[in-house]
Image (cartoon, rainbow, N blue to C red):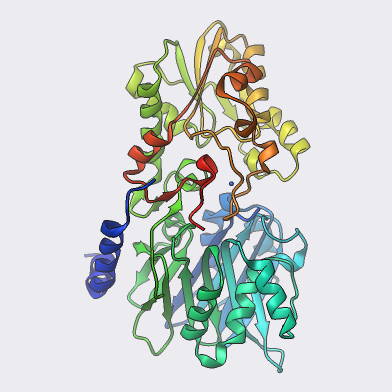
Length: 483
């Protein structure tokens, strides 16, 4: 019989579980370029860290497609490899996989927000001692809001930076205080930095992870067995390596493990902790088969389709979802309305999501390559089009034109996110406000611009109902951020 590691582990951590419950009960119900993926694994014995990190990062490829890297701990020596490209391409460039098989590894798949796109900004970042040995390495998902200020402060103290990314600020702050002990160095760092950060890291003997006090970017803990633990941005990375999902890392939590800890150990940062995870994770970024904060992403997307039907019903002949993240919502819309769902938009599976293509010119060109309509199904039909969001509006406008050319009689466009009116400074690649179409047009003006018959956005109230609370960051919809 398979051992229930989650049950066993949560029993041991009942105190922390209670803290999570207290966090939720005490938080008031008041109320988009580095959207990256991070992964780490630790075992008390040697494992195939080369393959496991490859599997875990491949499962997180949707979170970043520009570069990838790993750091591996083997016999108290850390080796680092990073390069431009997709996960599988980067791993093919590692000529001696056996050098990257140890007992711990961290990895990163990158999409740029802070810092330019030079190789020195690829992660994981590492720090060396006077003997040219790597003593510390980290991978970071998120974005710091006070990175420039802290960088100047450290430079004035003589700290030399190798990159332009805000993530290196985290590395250098921890390095600066390592003589006080790793956990204390992390606490001092967390007390200095502001913004969004989920981090995994290694020293020459310890694996660690920590998360900001609002839990803005996701981070989950899993276990393969009682001696092998993994941390990742999403639970799909745990599935990819055969690990059980144990729980989410708490806001403000520091988790660490080494040969002396007898399993993972955890400490909480002092101060106020309020869960404010990014709501856009559920709408767009996370894979639909992920579970974040004990919520199934697919179910949220399906419910959003149901809600937007209830919010503004319309008569039509078919519902279509824009692949991939619009499809679950389209299915939900179809179930609620009784209007048949039809996969009338075919996606070229070799094209990445248009939102991840860095330049505006390429975004517009990619639409024609990425999505192609089934003309015979669409001609003379009244169509409800479900998409996850409208950002710049150029992709949506081109898509509507493609459907018109295919002979659609009516087009009713539905966005299952509220209007995006503010740029994000917490780790998502949204454009500046002048390029966010909903920040510059009313819904009626946008309807006319897109040339659709009707246009509707999911309301923030309905989004909160779907998510089950107000304990999320809705900053890109309201302009108000937790930090």
